[in-house]
Amino acid sequence: MASIESVTGPIDAEDLGHTLIHEHRRERDQPNAVRLPHLYDDGAIITLVTDQGRAHAARGRNDEA
Image 1 (cartoon, one colour):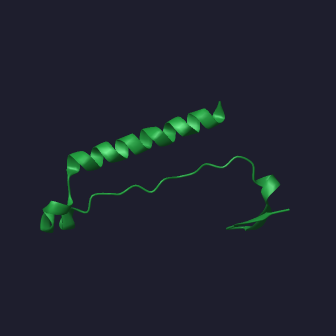
Image 2 (cartoon, helix red, strand yellow; image 1 turned 60 degrees about the horizontal axis):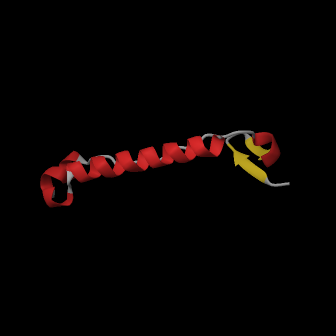
């Protein structure tokens, strides 16, 4: 049986149960945005992360159905 390493030691994969994932999102780096404004398009970044977040949420709902 597969084993999962946890902070309290190994756990059998079958004993793990349901787990929640988390996502890493890009955050605005204000000092760099000021120094390098040509690298930041706030509107495009907001649209991108919003679309990605909705896509992830939709997949999660579909997986549970």
